[in-house]
Amino acid sequence: MFEWYDFWLAGAAAATVWPRIFFPASLNPAIALAISISTVGLQYFARPVGAIVFGHLGDKYGRRNSLVWTLVIMGISCVGSALLPPYASIGMLALAILILLRFLVGFGFGGEQGGATSWIAEAKPDAKHRGFWISWPYAMNGIGKLGAILAFYIVSVSMPNAAYYDWGWRVPFAVGAAMLVVGFIVRVKLMESPMFQQLKVKRTVLKYPVVEVFRAEWRKIIILTFLNLSAIAPFVILPYSISYLVKLGVDESFANLSVTAGSLAFVFAVLGGAYLSDHLGRLKIMRVGTVLTIASLFPYFFLLKSLNPVLIVFAQMLLYTVILLGYGAVNVLMTESFATKYRYSGAGIAGQLGQLLVTGIPVAVILPMYIMKYGVLGAEQPVLWTGMVLCIMALVASFFVKETKATTLD
Image (cartoon, rainbow, N blue to C red; front, side):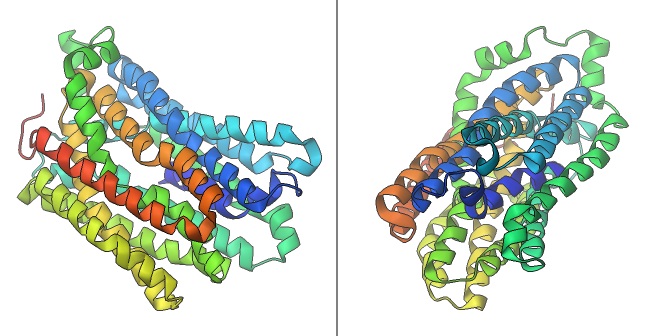
């Protein structure tokens, strides 16, 4: 939860504050916004690197140690974001440091998800609702996002604009750094995964687990990577919808608050989808969620354009629910698809490559191009159709992967 909070602070800041803080005032606002969003997209390019490095370490030396270091790296970046001087003080160096900090966040975070879900799966592999429990680290995405958006909302409405843009926006990052200390203490006291301990006892720990998982499971990694493409909304539409609503005339604070409602739906949708997949199967729930996502994209933008506060909140909750219903099952399936000897590496790499396809490239490259070419409002249709294409690709990929419900983990 703490890591997701810090991760999403950057998304909220990039869409609202950073274009005014870390860029010259003479720069076209649309270009500043596009570049600012791209710095967040950079995190997704760093995440596969982190998944490879920490996946290797986690499969060779243990899940616990790797999970401690991912937290430390994210803590360093969070503190750096809170203290980073603006463009007015150090010029382009501010943007350069910002880019470095965003890369560190992605690097640390990339090593996180595969390890967290592997540890839970291996703690009690025969649990009746194994999928439900595996989905908890990802469900905390919603709580972290909720905290991040609320933090920015509170500081933005509780002080004058000048103070908010001067130092107020930094407060949520400072709070996040303090929370990570709590997470660090929890991680240090954590026991190692029982199934990994068995590998050590049997002396079957691989010398080069990352190399082995690519050699033995490269087809599975590719298919699972494309399975992630159904999860476009939480990552692409989040930074876009805030700017979109503001351009329509919606108050910036309310635009952020409406996304908060979607974050509440996030938690229940992920856990609900994973719980249903324990009974009906991972692939069936994933396909239902993806089809519902495709059907919801046009109504989503229609409801946003109504400018009705109730309908805007409903739109955010609707889209997040249908998308994450299916993705709750996808996240479980990725963890269950690999053997213990390289589960951390396999689940992490497939998940982070998938996030790169569905978020890194769209957020860092495609979305900024749309905004610069069509403007914030004009980018609506390109964003919508991009989402549909990605969902269709995920559906096709789902027919090339095996069901993992009720399988025995080895």
